[in-house]
Each structure stands twice: as structure tokens, then as C-alpha cells.
Length: 317
Image 1: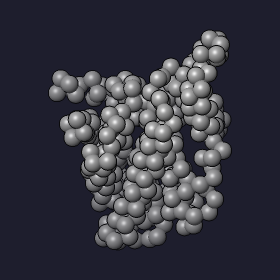
Image 2 (image 1 turned 120 degrees about the horizontal axis):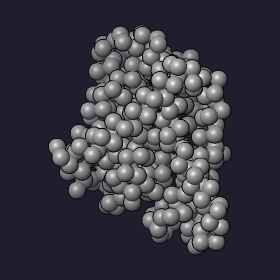
Image 3 (image 1 turned 45 degrees about the horizontal axis):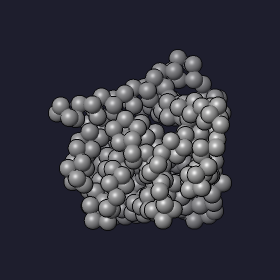
Image 4 (image 1 turned 180 degrees about the horizontal axis):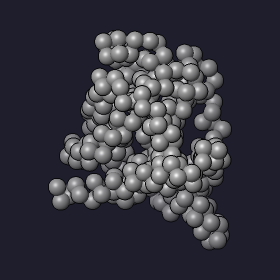
């Protein structure tokens, strides 16, 4: 318990920032009209700056030959998560209350993908700093899976959603950062520029957490998420029971790199991501089911994140 307490405190700190975002929304200090602007600033300016800052001070990327492994693992793990959640929703869903195609698709999208950014990144910075680069690369693969397989699940068609990550500033920030690192050009970037990049990057995670809390509190006002306890329990069992076991087993058998194993451990411990709620609403699917999955797994995460991190650390060595 003494070893777990710093992790528990850090997890609580992350959720406290989200709670402050929720309070700001309730008090009218962070309005819904500002969400799109702040989200665009976070995704297009602050996150790329955060990625460049992390790469500029890291010596972890020694070879392009190893840089492909984290995104491939992220893509495959997320694809498997979507597949398992969709199979469960189709086969067992009708007995749990997932009786419509819309509710089954919403369950599969939300339970199939973990919160891969704003919660694991601060935990990695605090406890596993050498794994931050691998986590960033891993998340590129998760993004591609979300905008291809995830969109196919929630929209009912493959479409062209997979192209979206290819034009995103965070992806190009990763590509540019790897290139600068490989060509040893980082040392030529002026210190004032690096300082400005670091200052902008330092805002990315706190602002992302504040926005997440504000978005969640908007949905909390619709108390329909309190119903259907069997769906909530199924979401916890899939997202924070079965899928972590599969991820840790794959990490133990297939991953030899210590830092990538750390990423696997972090991702296995995470609740469902928040953004799929927005996608579910955008595609006119069952928003109530999406809310139940995301909110109940987030509540359970307060207890389960430290437990899974402890299990993962022991399992993966």
C-alpha cells in the first residue's frame, strides 16, 4: 500500500483537475461556446507543442526501425478492443438491455477504446518518464484505429474517416520531431523557441482535463445515465476486466521493450475515453449508452487504475 499511495494520489489529482473543469462549467466560467475554440487550440497548438517538447529533450528514439512498434501495437490493441466490445454487444447485449443496433454500436465504440491521452500522459510523466515518447507514438496508432475502425462501427460504414489523422497537427508534430531527432537538428533550435514550445506544451494536459470535466458535467445533467445497471456493469467488466487481461497477456508475450511494456500497463489500466460520446451524438446513435459506459468506467477507474497498475507492474516485470 505504501508503494501504491503515490499512484493513487496522482490518479486522484488527475480526476480533481477534471472536477475543477466540471465546477467551472457549472459556475459559467467555462462556457459551452468556448469548447470548440479551446479544443482546437489544445489539439492543433498545445498538443503538438507538447509532443515536440518531449521529443526535443529525449534520447529515447535511437532508431526509426523501433519507432513503428508503439503505433502498430496501439492500432492493433484498439482494433481488438473494438472487436471484442462489438462481439459482446451483438451476442450478449440483448440480455443486458442493448436491444437496438444504435445502442450496440455505441457500447462497442465506447467500451472498445480506452482513455489513451489525458489520463495516462500525466501518470507517465510522474512515474515513468522514459516511456512518455513510446506513449505518444502508441497514441498515433490508437488515433488511426479510432478514425477508421471506430468510425466504421459508429457510422455503419468505413467511409473516409481514416484520413483525418493524416492531416492532424499532432501527427505531423510527431513526424517532424522524429526527423529532427534522427538528423540531430534539435540542438540548432534556438533556446527561446524551445522555451515557448515548452510553455505551450505545458498547457496541453491541464486544459484537456478541464475540457473533459466540462463536457462530462454537461452529460451528467441528463440523469438517464443512472439507469440500466447491467449495461454499466458489463462496460466495467469488458473495458476494465477482460481487455486489460488481453492487453497484459499480449504485452507479456509479444513486447520485449521495457518502455513499451510500461505503455501497455498504463493503457490496460485506463477507463473508456470521453471523446466517443461526442462521436456517438454526432452519428445519432444511443448517447445514453455511451454516457453509461464512459461515466461508470471513469468512476470505477478511481479504484481500478492503481490496482491494474500494480497487477501490470508485477505481470510485466
